Length: 205
Image (cartoon, rainbow, N blue to C red; front, top):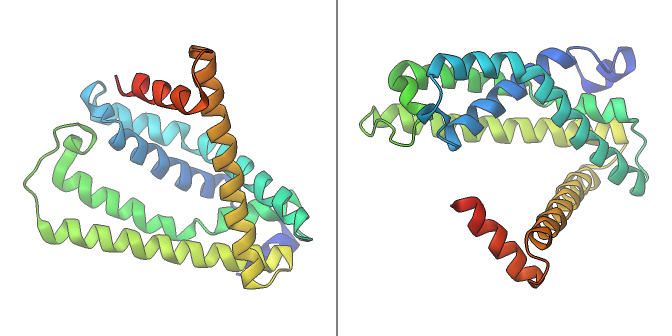
């Protein structure tokens, strides 16, 4: 089924399921990066991720697609917000593979995946396989997304890529400004560069 057929018939088709897939993987990745397992039991992490996943996924879908939609309008794109959201959501289909990869890692490493001191000895072949597989899935998903944006926006591939890159830049600049603003709020006497440095150091403590 193509993205053109999906948005023509029902741009909301499969949205909650795709949001769950994206949200579940996103929360697991975040939990691993923050070593949440040092404070919360492994099963609770999985349960929390599974329950919160669709809501977090929908929030990300909505925010990112809204930015792509607005940038697309500046580039004379034709997509509505729901079309832009469907394009992003359906590009997440390959992420199903990552759920299988997580299951493999959990089966081997268990709850130590979410702890600061992870099990250091493990099958090197498995780790390399998971790394390569995740890169392949990421590229696969990105290719689908670029083509989906091109379809719903009625863009060339080049303009579709520009739409996505400009959306990332817009979000990056906005987050940077918010970061500087928070730094100023903490200490108004600091210069912008020192405000960012001060806030970053506080976050690391």
